[in-house]
Amino acid sequence: MRVVLLGAPGAGKGTQCKRIVDRYGVSHLSSGDILRRNRSEGTELGNKAKSYMDAGALVPDDLVVAMMVEAIKEVSDKGFVLDGFPRTVNQAEELDKTLAENGESIDLVLNLQIDDQIVMQRMTGRRSCPKCGAVYHIENLKPKVDGICDKDGTELIQRPDDKPEVVENRLQTYHRQTEPVVDYYRRDNRVYDVDAGKSVDRTSEEIYGKLDALVST
Ligand SMILES: [Zn+2]
Image (cartoon, rainbow, N blue to C red; front, side, top):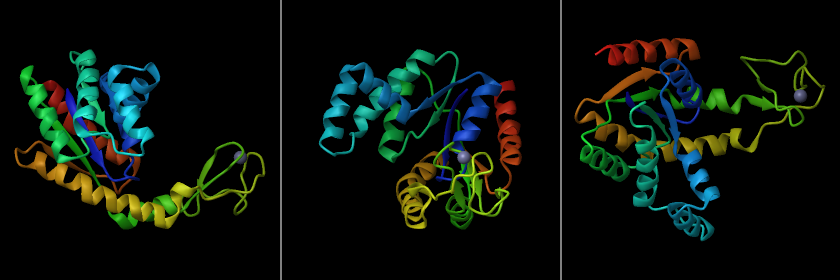
């Protein structure tokens, strides 16, 4: 199973990824984790990436692809789900090219679809406890007393990441960058659209249905 998981921020990508890994025993390859690991282990690729990041620049596509391909090679017989990668059409093309050299390809792209409005509601409604890290929601998961943590009585805060202008910004970046990637995979019918606007469990069910069929073929 060689799967890419795409979806807007707030679509529940992290949770679904974890569930896929648990159910099918595939490896979770997150571009963020892999970049951090390469940097901390001081690999050649990691050091190159570091020099860009230290200069405040984006890590170039070829470097990101090289790191991901290396990670894929380590797990290739087990299968994998890619998370946070490919982020651009160029990365998707490079990935296809490199996999094809080994006679491999991406089997399926799961595209978690969700309205921006629902994402805004989900994310900007979150309130967190700065002391214990508990997360609440002003509509869906209210604390017993408004604005106060159930566990330790600490006043809840809205994390900077959950502020409306920040969420709005991330959504725009997503639409601009990642939607062309979805369109790229759509061209040869590799995309399976999943409605991520319902409950987390309903979304999982839909994903399992598709992946179970993939595994059994
Ligand atoms: Zn607390």
